[in-house]
Image 1: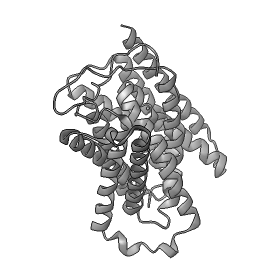
Image 2 (image 1 turned 30 degrees about the horizontal axis):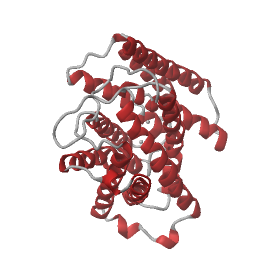
Image 3 (image 1 turned 60 degrees about the vertical axis):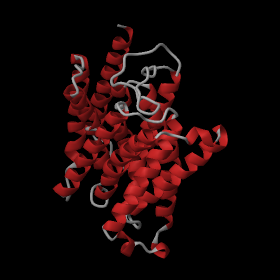
Image 4 (image 1 turned 45 degrees about the vertical axis):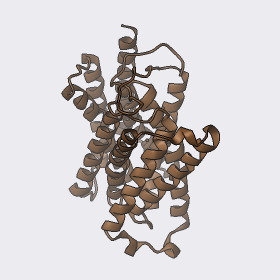
Length: 325
């Protein structure tokens, strides 16, 4: 849910470590490792919308999300302890609180609401709506006193224009306004979590931070599911094989692989560059729909996808220019 090369100017301050004091910002980079992590987030997260849709066919939304993230977080914590020693998981009280807050914003608020919405909203439409994340990010940067360049705003505008073209056919059919607004609320909370992670005293180790965020966010989802009474709708014997497979895919690839890459990107790359995944994921979702579900590639999908990619290129180019100046 992230590197060699020279340092870049950050879209947001890097996370500080240590108990309460601030530390020099982590270097912002745009080298091969960043592009590799972005490729994982682009492709894997583009496919998770379909996996979520299949999972919630027979598993309640918040319980499925909570189980997914708690399991993935505990596995990642075990890997970190095995590879680096238990000391790698030691954090201060402030770091733990920050990681928990970010995890709740990203996973309970952001991902949890999207999973809830996908009980009634098609996965492709959900992916298109989530692409509003960069708009919230730029707005949050502006409200915090930063002044994103005109080209950054232009890239956001171009991306939104492409998404409008993509979304027109997506809104056809019987899709309730409540589901759409639920996804939009999720994108705002996800953006707040991403923005806050660069301004709070987070754990220095991105993998440890990812594990703590997943456990905290997963526990939050489980409590929400129990509060909604989802346990009464959970019958293990009635969970379909494809839902089990999709849930396993989400644990391994959506959480352990892609979310960890995303957290690493939040620590290591410009935020506006990291946020471009929200433009690419819908394109991936549409392409997967065409390849796997034989969905037609209409002219509006092709045109909208091209405009979206153009917006991503403009934002990336802007970040490289800011890095050099």
